[in-house]
Length: 77
Image (cartoon, rainbow, N blue to C red; front, side, top):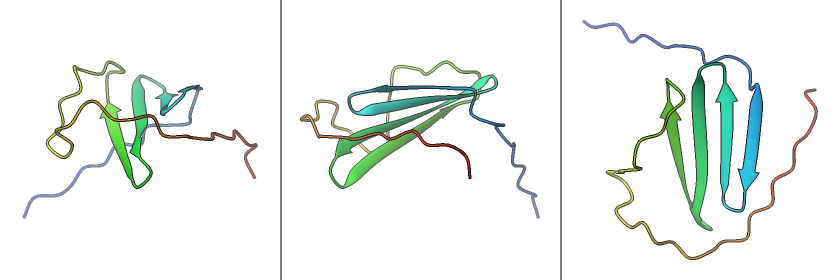
């Protein structure tokens, strides 16, 4: 039986919010969260910090209408 190997990304060292997308840096890795519709988000991981062209098996559509997104940065508890 194969054993799953998980890798901890580390603390968030930088973030950038731009309309419908939140980019997080965690050491060398990057995480991108995109709001595509009020009920749909795409989460991507780039272990080396570089995202490719954005191909998705789950969301074939690429031209999504604007969705109002509010991002609030808070302090750690």
